[in-house]
Image 1 (cartoon, rainbow, N blue to C red):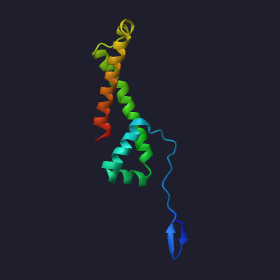
Image 2 (image 1 turned 180 degrees about the vertical axis):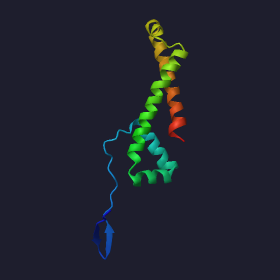
Image 3 (image 1 turned 45 degrees about the horizontal axis):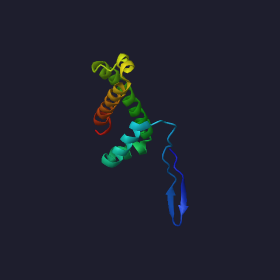
Image 4 (image 1 turned 120 degrees about the vertical axis):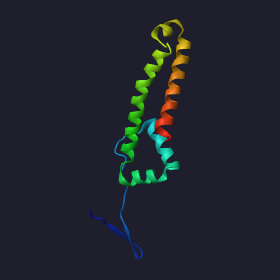
Length: 116
């Protein structure tokens, strides 16, 4: 690895740059995790940032969280009787129950994937 320097006064300063965010989509859960590790897991954040793995880590975490949501929401809907028949009969109740399930599933994700 070749390091270049530039002169500032009597000092040679290395020209170091951090890797760019190479088009990774970190999404909602990635941003929440980034904020959490910046505030509460400073060593992990700095290690991931300096190694250039932060954006990939956050993107993979976001994808994993969405995959878990896509798996558990339909199961919860089936278990609680949130069906197309209910949607046809009483749309507002269906929306209420669906939103409740969505929020509970996201709380699970936050507790088990983001704030750990």
